[in-house]
Image 1 (cartoon, rainbow, N blue to C red):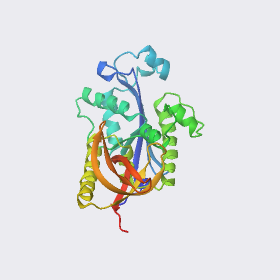
Image 2 (cartoon, rainbow, N blue to C red):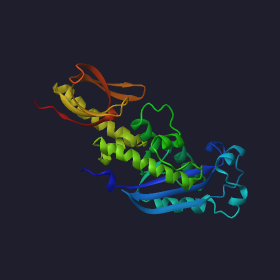
Image 3 (cartoon, rainbow, N blue to C red):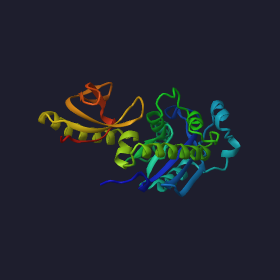
Image 4 (spheres, rainbow, N blue to C red):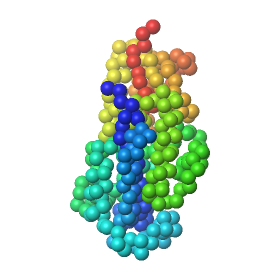
Length: 275
């Protein structure tokens, strides 16, 4: 069933930390989030966290969160469960989501909770890389500038969430201009949940393999990795191959009049081509 992106409840969150290595003892010192649907804001979460350890000099130079600011702050055991309640069933988003999720799951382990499961996670950095190919670099401040957003990155959690929300909305508008508004397609392109993505790609593989066996042509809707353009192509599928941890459809492309390889996760839609 089609579900538009604007009908989905999202949460963009960000963390500030004592350093870069949670497995070496670094902890979250600040976590913030904004919940929204479409253009409507539904709630805000914002809290400092006393990490029970010192902030590294390098981290302090970035976020300017001092020990004095954290003296009266609640600990992770109080803050993180409240954050989980705030998340609910929303789709969770972050810029460089793998970093924030590693820290969040580390805090859950410390307080005796299981790693976050059953929550879909989208990486806004992944959105930027796929929709703005060729930038060469993708730090948040650089992408913000290239999108014409005037806010400056301050490396405080709530401020960075505000900036990421603006980046998300700009990129979402770009998707809609390309005719991509379906939530399922959105997740197949930008989610980072390995199990979810494996399931989606496996479903595509099963259906496309049947087309190969039947020797029928497919009409596919495809997002180019090099230009971020969306095109419709007629393809005679020949094989499915795995290369460098990615799955590809190899087939004869009638648009290019040659054999081409198509990334499975970039295939937005396909159907049997009827002449």
